[in-house]
Length: 377
Image (cartoon, rainbow, N blue to C red; front, side, top):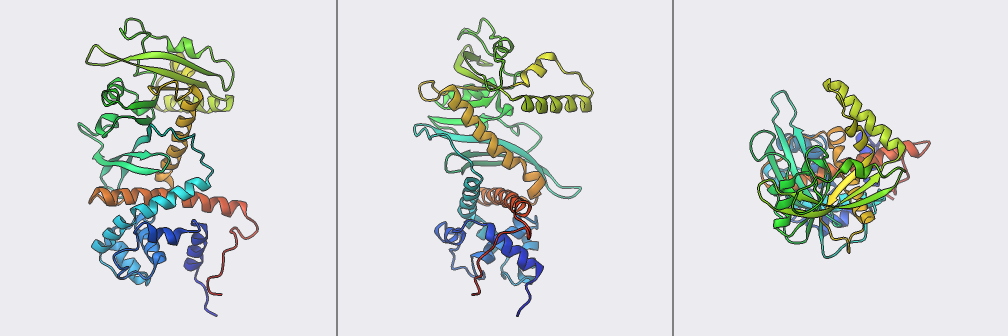
């Protein structure tokens, strides 16, 4: 009987964690087109791609290792083309794993195109590795990456903002504090798009009316929410920075749990201590709440709908935050948008698969993995 190597054993364990229809998805999404050429199977394609995506090897090093392992004999150019073809396959694998995590989306509002927007900074390996900022947008509920851009982290036009993104009427962009900016909000309104954004209380002022004569007292308003789970809603206006116009919207606020409040305060104090600065009382008070601003209509989205959509954005952001710890960002293929999007889906897939593997290994005893079917029967 042929002895199974530790590498093959580990790989078979990973295969057992993939969605049941992962091979069928490779066919239906077009990842196995171009006559397969020097790849023996969908398994060989996936294993080779993961050498590049998960291990962080360059395209050239990946093809050398793939040939030595008997997976494929291809050029680095051919591998890049295969990566582009795998974009939709990797996306579908991600969607399947996200659904397995129990991620529940709020009821779809078909008249609106819900988009999750974010950015992250990465640094390629090595002392001379360059630093890049990824800007991306994911459309829900299909998790389609509908916008992707890569910029430097320095210079004009490299910051995270809505104005760099193409938007259309009835788009709704959901984002965190980095996008809490009056100019960005007005940009979306000019294109008949909507916003749902976490409020940066230091940079985004609100007013009581469209004339922007009197400031809205946000601190006084949120302090009326005394009990965990209390929800508040207030109509406010955001003044344009360069014109005498205002955008009307709503502040939707929920008071955090005592545990969440404690964690937020610890994080603030730790950061203040590290930077040797003092914290203002109002900063500590705002840490007790989740505060979002939206222009979505009240008749279609209740305050609880708004908070639920933001919660979904936060769940997905947590997955992307694990890139740096689990997927080891680096060697980003900067050749074109297609290969970059495929690489992004691949990194997300690696993160989700790693988390699933950790869950199984810690929860299933005594051998640490579930039973897998024997394909050699």
